[in-house]
Structure formats: structure tokens, C-alpha cells
Image (cartoon, rainbow, N blue to C red; front, side, top):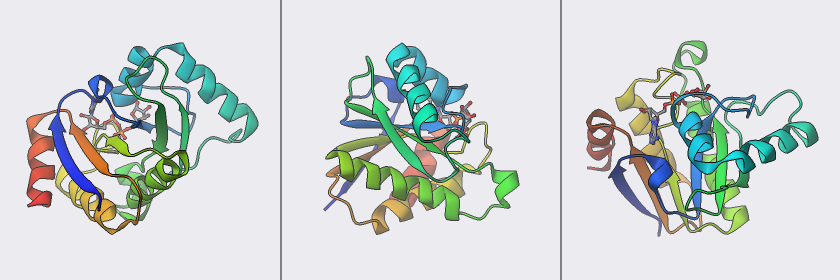
Length: 169
Ligand code: AR6
């Protein structure tokens, strides 16, 4: 059984086996949670991302996929980078957003991670409506078979926390 927990706060302050990053396909950093993870995790994460680009993702990591690197100086073993869909460009189709959660859990299982912290993917710069994003996140985690013991959603503000709390019921 996977336990789903909710925390309000900064995901870069969390202790977990794996911390998920809401990245972009370049894997070279950005704003929001991505910027925060690279800032606090230090340059080892960017170096690993550059290596992944060179070896596997010359055209970028496709939307909905996930890949792991070191977590650098974060209190975690791995960062799992996933690329959420842009709400407008996706037409609101939740398939790729669900894929981010499913693929991140698949990578977590490959790594042997037992605790995984997720941000609310696509709900910032990519503008996915919070209530719908929370529904997709919670439903997908509930419906994905995984050996992960704890999935922790780390929500940055009250609005995000409340949206996820409503979905958990
Ligand atoms: N801890 C937890 N959640 C956070 C943090 C944090 N430190 N900082 C922001 N959030 P966003 P996206 C919340 O924009 O929408 C980047 O530039 C934030 O309030 O980080 O998937 C990437 O490089 C929001 O609810 O990610 C991409 O280009 C959620 O995290 C693009 O943004 C996601 O917001 C990805 O956009």
C-alpha cells in the first residue's frame, strides 16, 4: 500500500529518497520549482542533466516522460525530472499530466526509492488549473501500481494545499 501525504512548503527542504522536479524539456533549469531545486541542490544536478542531454536527450526530454539524476546537496538521493504539459498547448487533455506522475513512479521503482516528494506539476508557469491538476495527480497516484511506500505532495501555498486536500477527501 502506498500512503499519500500532503505537506505545505518548499520541496527543496524535504527529506525523501527522491524529489520530483517540474522541469522543462531542455533539462537545463528554469524558474519556479525547477530553479529552486537547482539553486539549493547545487551544480551537480545541472552537470548530470547536461550529461543526460548529451547521451540520450539531444532533442530534449519529451513531455510526460521522467528521468533521474543525483540530488546534489538536497536531502535526497535522486531528483526525478519530469516535463509537464503546458495547459493551453495540451487543450486540457490530462493524459500527459497523468503520464508525468506515472513515469516518475516507474523511475522511482527502478531506483528503489521508497519515499517520493512531488510538487504540483504544471500548475505554475504551465498554468494548469489547480483543482484539475490535483485531481489528475491524486487519481493517477492512486491508480498506479508501485513499490513506493509514501508519495508526498509538497504544495507551495494554501490554495494548492487545499486543492489537494479536497481530492484526498
Ligand atoms: N516547492 C514546492 N512547490 C513549488 C516551489 C517549491 N520550492 N516553487 C514553486 N512551486 P512551476 P510548471 C510550485 O512553475 O508549471 C519552470 O521554469 C508552484 O507554486 O515550478 O510545471 C520550468 O523550468 C506551482 O504550484 O512548474 C519549466 O519551464 C508548482 O510548483 C516550467 O517552469 C509548479 O510550478 C514548468 O512549469
